[in-house]
Length: 418
Ligand SMILES: NC(=O)C1=CN([C@@H]2O[C@H](COP(=O)(O)OP(=O)(O)OC[C@H]3O[C@@H](n4cnc5c(N)ncnc54)[C@H](OP(=O)(O)O)[C@@H]3O)[C@@H](O)[C@H]2O)C=CC1
Ligand SMILES: N[C@@H](CCC(=O)OP(=O)(O)O)C(=O)O
Image 1 (cartoon, protein in one colour):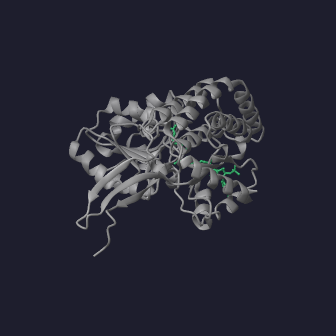
Image 2 (cartoon, rainbow, N blue to C red; image 1 turned 45 degrees about the horizontal axis):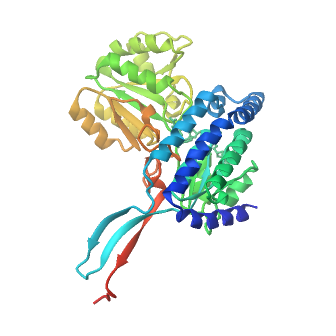
């Protein structure tokens, strides 16, 4: 079944690679309309998924991730519309040159071919990935989380109809609708048909892909995200940024997990931070030394941190707090505990900001801004297929261009090499 699916995707990818931008945009326009028209069916399927998830005892964070309501559907359509308006990378010519031999050269953007994405139970990903894949001329094999199977089925059927209406091959979007995990292992061996695998999910999924895939893998990684409050930081403004990074959507990978505070301001800053964010329901896990230095007592919102708290991606309203003696100590902590997703500094000191940016090797490094910006739409890509925490070939949110490669095009006047 999977081989047939991959063969169909490969064949469709050849047709799609030759499709005009107008046809791809017509698909995206049609899809935006069809999603809104189909909202009743979509939301009904999603509420069935949510009910099953509740009955299965999923955490609130996971239920939040898989829930679609009218507002979120509008967000999905807005991201799709961004992709519609984004420039089509395919066919772009760059790095033109003429070599001493007389050879005329340029590079031209081409699709990767067939992309397989294994992703979490977050149904917007189905539309984000399909829209970016098709606009960048790639076929895609989708394998979403089992908890959103019903929602994804409706999304995919709407996507297929929009493909047909735009005159594009519907086989370019393949969907694995059986939750059997053995199929994931099978998929990872289909290098004859699949050009890149993107696993979006937890550590176990990443390990499985690293160890079993015969296809190049780009990991959409876990986010243990940090903000360092430097001694020169504007403290009230820092609280606003920390609040945004922690509470705007705690269940996603770019939400803040750890705040490091310069020890010279910790006693002044931490009580204010706790006072303000407790009102939002944040639970603080404070390093013991800092707890004692600030004279804090344990409450239901303020707990003594254990060492392992600094290696947790909370995906909830929990927040780890530690004081550091210097910028270098902050950098050393982040280097030891970060997952290279999103880390930032809050500071008024330009040379500290510069040193932080140079020494922290994360996919997105922030100065005086919230980690929540690590998102394809927010970084101007329309939406994203995943947030890569790898170094090759793409880093951070992966948009249209990250789904392409290039070919050299060389021409001469019946030129031969001397
Ligand atoms: N940087 C990024 O782009 C992203 C990062 N993440 C990170 O992912 C984590 C949360 O994701 P979570 O919901 O736990 O995702 P999981 O890793 O549990 O699941 C993601 C997908 O992988 C599949 N999968 C997981 N384990 C296996 C296995 N052993 N064999 C085969 N398939 C498997 C799941 O299938 P099944 O349905 O069977 O469970 C699902 O389709 C967080 O750490 C988050 O930060 C998530 C998304 C994007
Ligand atoms: N695109 C996201 C961030 C990245 C992401 O995919 O998060 P998640 O799937 O929850 O780990 C957003 O901020 O909306």
